[in-house]
Amino acid sequence: MDVSIIIVNYNTLKMTKECIDTIFKYTNGLHFEVILVDNASEDGSKDFFGKDDRVTYIYSEQNLGFGRANNLGYEKSNGRYIFLLNSDTLLIENSVLHFFHFMEKFSSDFKIGACGCILVDINLQQIHSYGYFPSVRMIFKDFLVYSKKILRIKKGINEQLVFNENGSIDVDYITGADLFLRKEYIENLSTFFESDYFMYYEETDLQYRMAVQGYKRCIINNTKIIHLEGGSLNTQEFKKKSVFKFYNTMLPSMYLFLNKNYKPIRKLTYLFAFNLLVFPKILLKKMTFEERIKLISLNFKKNNL
Image 1 (tube, rainbow, N blue to C red):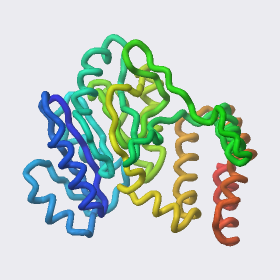
Image 2 (image 1 turned 90 degrees about the horizontal axis):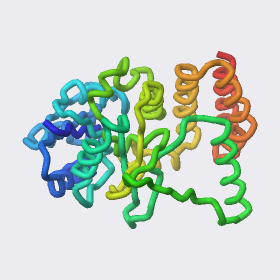
Image 3 (image 1 turned 120 degrees about the vertical axis):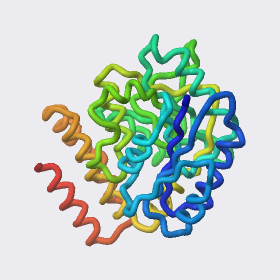
Image 4 (image 1 turned 180 degrees about the vertical axis):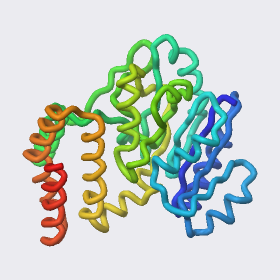
């Protein structure tokens, strides 16, 4: 088996079906399997996908979150490569084959452990596709971008990607929406996804551990995938309904990542910059006075762990 495609579904029957349909419409030229892990959906997904012969269907009796659900799929996988694909994505070409050919050609020589591509929205405009590990430098860079937007200064806001002769560019981490991994390298890590995370920072943690082992992560430029941004976990709706709930979930994951992976001095330096430049911006978001107090209390508690 060449590639195991793992999708996590949580109450997104229609969207997940459309994602799977595009996989089988465009993917050819290699042997692949689709493993669908269902996080206790209550929208008819169990009855529907349980009868879909195209997929290996795994139903969890509880919502395990992104990382732990992917762990279930990983345990059942047979491919030499693992392709994590969000249920709110749509293939528009044979992206899986592009990833496969790239890794087959360059992975061994350059020790590339994972690749992804530029994600686009429904209008084919580039959206968030990769990121950088938490650092003081990135906090100041984000603060500068934020300040330019406030002042309506457009020049220099968008990062320009410069791809190398292999058609790739190294990044710290690829978003979990389209993460193509070499299984052989993953098996050299202590675990796949850490079980302590429920939502956010799981893929950051995984790829940080890959970086420690010397495995590169990169974005390739010869394919694109549509990402409907947050539909698989209703993230955008989640943010709109309650900014507080979003940050109340995200912040503990951030602190978990820092505590697991950074030495004390590096962690404290980052947190100083975070609390100086980022946390005040969070508190300006739309939320009630009580919610602001709760976030301040949460952040204070985490800072003193």
